[in-house]
Length: 166
Image (tube, rainbow, N blue to C red; front, top):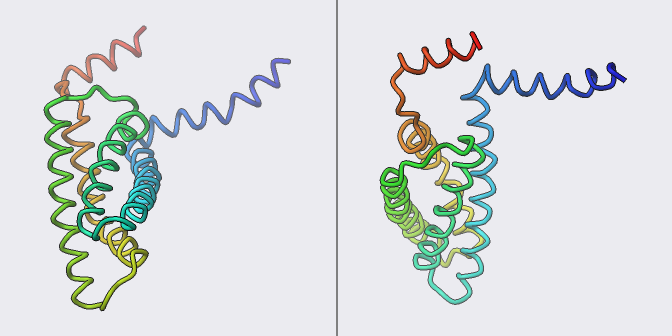
């Protein structure tokens, strides 16, 4: 019976050790997965709204909804339920919406200059492709500023030393 527990516990221990030894890699993978899902959700909302609205207004509404949802999902999943710095979160959400609003609207307008009557699917795919750069910058802002641990490095070292002695 003890062998079964050790055998089933080994992968869980390896996963936990990997997460501790490579936290940045784990965050990047989780962020990429949520980013892909968020981009997909944004595209679906955009395509639904595109039936009633022009490209830019549909894009802005989809953007606001997907930004709010993805920030909370990243807080819980990518950054392990990190404490929210409310004003930083508000500034980041507002900044993200403003950045993507201008950036993706410009992308849509440029697409319209180069492609006569682009389809909603092409518009959505173009915005999704352009969002890769913005997503990379957003990851860094979330990791280094919004969900950053403000504890000074000396205090972190003391806490880790105390935890290992316990």
